[in-house]
Length: 294
Image 1 (cartoon, rainbow, N blue to C red):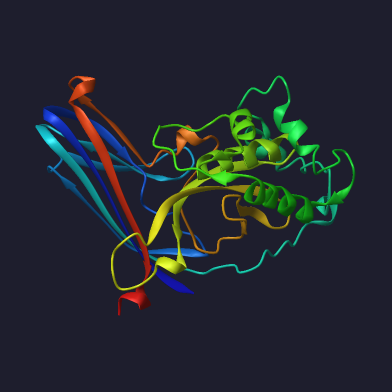
Image 2: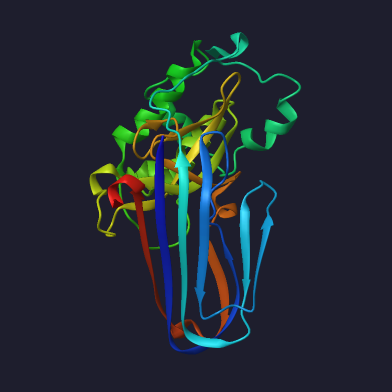
């Protein structure tokens, strides 16, 4: 068990005062048996006229933040304290019928899982399938857990991480062509590959703890992150982080789950002004253990 403390700050600057519109924030971690939210605080500058919390269709906590003023500066500061219980090794307790792949989800679960099995990105030339064929023999019986770990490792070992400032997520065929991408790109590639094999898979956004950066100084000690979960009968939704080759929740702090990446954007909003008014955005994220700050 570990107590993680997250500080997440996002700052927007503008050439002149612009009228601020609604902003939507996803930063409050999800409560679960392996992750308990101890405390969460949000400070917004300038002061908003209203902050309204709601649950979206996936049960994520979402803040709608309204403003009644103009400003040349906008800042969101979140501080989070989470009690985290890591799974240091995958514990695949798989139902007998699903121990080997391919298998079919049981009738009572299949309707609820169907949206997560359906592929989202068009792939008429089957780029994902042809990539899978380089290390898997599709249609051949294989242990389910072994197959998924192989897929996770194929992305972790075969692609280069490339920080990209442009918004959005690459389509899987682009990631396969470039052999590089961001954590969101790798999560999407794994999701689409798993779905092509008949698995239910969903997108996760949150934070990652980086042990090598831990310490008493609040500087570069973590990052926002994206990975995926795959539904395995008997084990439920299991975490796979293809960027780092992690299976299970070790060092991962879940904030939001979604069917596709555009449903889990940490922060976005509007303003009234010209495109040239925007001077840029700065994001600072630190994830520390409480013990390192003593």
